[in-house]
Image (cartoon, rainbow, N blue to C red):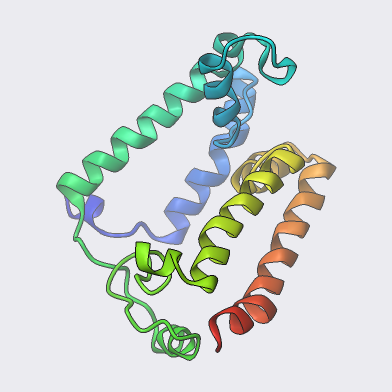
Length: 187
């Protein structure tokens, strides 16, 4: 039980994550990804007429929706029975870097100074939560998949578009971290 309560070391978690997409391709010819489920849910819930959502979502996405349901159930079970109810420990350098950006509460997984109803009413909070959410959704739809889909599954399938997308994700992350966040948060 202690093994489930602690973070898994990189040499266990990394190979498990890295081997899952190729195994999925070899065994079932399925591409691993989470963001495509939003399209499957829209195709299942929206009435016909929208060409983008007019396809056999059961045939293409039932297994993936089942996977997402398993992720949700696993997350609920972990949160209820296996959680230590605390943030992962951060290094002193990480805490100092966050403090320089004005983030002092690191007692939970998400900083309350950024992700709360109060911060949503501020310009930085609105830009981060609403603007960031829109850009992530638009980027995922435009790139044909999210970071995990391209970085884990697309690279495992040796797809050039996934390599380009991953390079774009990393460049965007670096630009956000070093140029946008310090200006937005006043650090």
